[in-house]
Image (cartoon, rainbow over all chains, first blue to last red; front, side):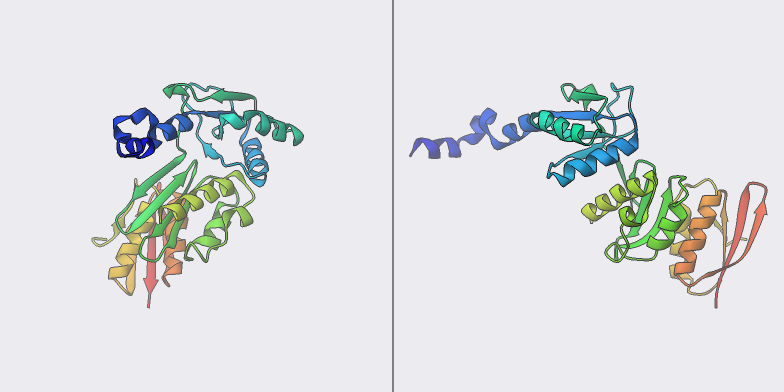
Length: 189
Length: 72
């Protein structure tokens, strides 16, 4: 048996070299970008995604007591490149925090609730509910922004695939949160 | 009012889901829905309209809304 085959066969005996261990260590090499307000988060997300970076919009960890209700999680190794890109658009975060302890873990902004025949996803202050069987949007609620009734009017009664995208028809932070909820419910289905 | 849907005290989407479930069982006629927020009233009205039900009356009673929905 070659040395390589020996390691492949006995991978579980050497957990430190296993794929899972590698992934876990990679997963921990993250940082969060903290911005003053949500508009800056949205702008930064758009800028960075356009450049091809994979990131996640999350809720701030309990230890972070300043900034807004959303943070952007990035791979730590890309910090300098990402900051350079954000500087070009004059939208720099107020803080970059490496995720180094459980209290610095960003929190999921999504809440998923199963109502039997229906599924609801909440992202920040917006909720979208669909009928599971046909993916028909049965309710949009939350927010308090002036365009929420319009968003609901345009989307309720349509299937997820037929519905216009909140990011295309919304003009407020509620539209942005609803887009996040929409993407998450699509992912859940 | 025995067969009214009492969705007071429930947050969205529950009033809407209760109303839709009733409409699936009761194909036409009249349904009374009680809600206690303006948002729930709007959401139930929208969902009902999408299923072909009309809001024919809303009575505001203190903090509650008594909605009458009809379908021929």
